[in-house]
Length: 466
Image (cartoon, rainbow, N blue to C red):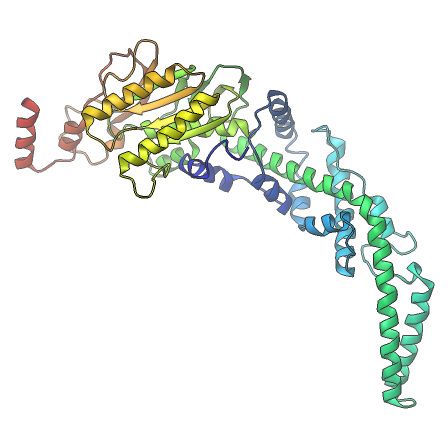
């Protein structure tokens, strides 16, 4: 489901931070993560959550995986080539043997825990095929037991090399003779490699399945560690309910707390149709939208969520139009690019069940017309079976059929004459309000707190009185 969410939207909502926070230990885990697609089947998603729940319950018992998983070298191409009938080199045969041994070692630790339904398949037949006389060993060589003819050739070559070393007979003749035996040895080794590769070929199905499972195990382990670190929660998968209680965005929270400031968690419920989000500039509307989008996307990937509790529906995708979503189109004005992007989003709204995030739409045109565009889009989206969250600084955008949330904004600062740290004066709490609620007009307050030029301030006050 590559069209579930655009790569620029993933970046805008902070998904890269989640990827960087994941403790992926093996190359197979990284490949599994890179190929990860959202799960939109309820049964499959609940199965993934059950697995993750078991991993969290057994993290202490899973500790041996921390040293085992990094030892897996990525030999997917080698295994796949063997599966397809290619003849392997001695090095490739050795790599397959070593990985088969490591898979058995992982199976002995992981399988007894029964944290998931799947098991690492036994690879003993592969190990024994690549061992001398079926005797287990950690090395690999084209053993003489593979061919009596190879034994004879090697013995004769060794005799000739001894004669060369001891300078017996004509050296040139001995070198020519040696070259002939080297050629015979290579020919016989090729036959052995070919036979081994063909015998291994049907066994590679097991190794490929193990490789995929190892990647999944590695990702589940990473998810569990992340969930434990941030005290994330397992969401309830619903048909239509979409509720995030005390949600937060981990990247933004880390940044705020790094600056010794207090981060505000918020709760929100989205109903099918349009939900309006208002608040003054710098009040955190964009953060709320990104937090909602990130958590819903993570839910579809089988991650625990960054909130206290959650109920989430399954959707077909997430569409986001905002300052960070890179919706510019070459040759169009800023507003033209917005219209082009909104038109594409409208097509998705008509086709299915999506989360549509619109952050300050029509901000690049004049306020009089901008307000009409936003109000029209809010009404349009409200009739469809999708979840549309619109942030705006325009008044009168919603109606009494739509949910309306507002960020509190600036606290009482009557006793404060000057303050550059607006964060400490801002209340970032969400509250549900009536659709007639007026958007806070706090630009003048902000300018006052930042001690704007006194002469300019007089002109500003006259304009506010007009």
